[in-house]
Image 1 (cartoon, rainbow, N blue to C red):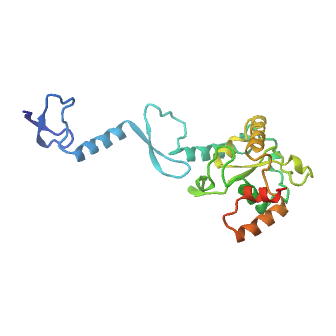
Image 2: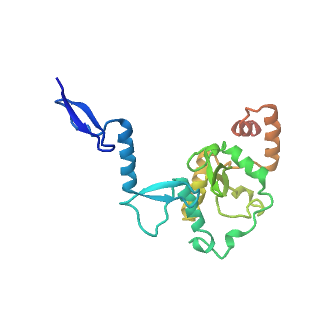
Length: 236
């Protein structure tokens, strides 16, 4: 038979009775689950430091043993990526080239063209495979879904206007992958070329004629995919 013992709650000091079993590994310390969770919450705050996310403004806790004075903390990986983007603008970015990256895009690199690239890649990040509906960004402290960025594989903004169509390569990237691709450009270029050739057989975009034809057919057949369209267009 278990032994009945009298105890006092370590949180509210209320007396209570409990039973002690032979195989019981820990003593009962609280009179209820409510007292236990209140004690646990207080203990959590005791060993953590309250912080406010500089991106979204949410309150969160940082463990004391990892907290460092002067370091900026964020509440999530998404906010951390947004903070890094803000801190690596222009002269603070190691890839900054006196504003060379601010050059204008070719006028043909317009919204219909970019949407055609997304269609070719089935609205998924060409690097990690993330779907466009899961591409979350933060603007003015608000999280929202954004269209995938269309990246120039060769880092040439005048592509589409230089007349070398056989060398054009584009790849849609999610917010995180697009940020990463700004560093070690030579390595990323080689990786993206390989992806375009292996995953898309070198077909990474739709020409203006293909774009108009595809969406004209898609209105008649909403389930039509770009891959099926390309196969039918180049059959025979």
